[in-house]
Length: 291
Image (cartoon, rainbow, N blue to C red; front, side):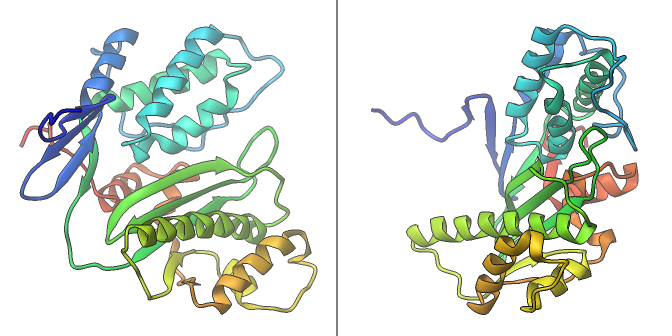
């Protein structure tokens, strides 16, 4: 072992330090990907996925090169390590790696066109006065066009900095939006508890309840209501898990308006204006952009 100095580049991830904080990006990785696909001269787009897309597996779809599709999607998945802005789009196109069509390939190319607009965008980690752990959770009810499964997503912040994020299709079909949100809340709680456990091992302890913001009042009411009824029987295990953490005052569920729900960017398509606003609030910047 030897001292190589301050970390600057590791496995395609670039690290830059300044008075503002520490920035993580994959600028060279993106440029290499665009060069490999011949997209360096393409026209950029403002969002990584088309608004109100109808992507799915159709019986009359035109197949495309499966090997090329899988390679591109695999490289985009690795890019999501520093690019939460493309996480939802990548999660959508990754669902069709076993039966891709030309329409799915066009969706992949749209992600590349979005990356062309800001290849150096990444996450900025700053030191601030915030001393807490919090998260945002959301679900898009029955959003999948083929199976009608819901997509849930969560974001977790430690001292105001984005740490983890995930967009995932739920394993079962939710029968209501409250059920879809409730399952998403359970996933978000597990992630927050894991982060708290890791920080505890590092001797960093937080005594205040962890805030998990949700924009569905019905799901929050179910979490606080210990009475069983028809609306909660199919999510009984999640309900008892959430009830236990609420009783121990480990977590709480503040209500957040849909306009301020940051996890929307992980579960559905949003307008250009809302997309840019959310990305800014996640702490994403482009240190390579011209000023």
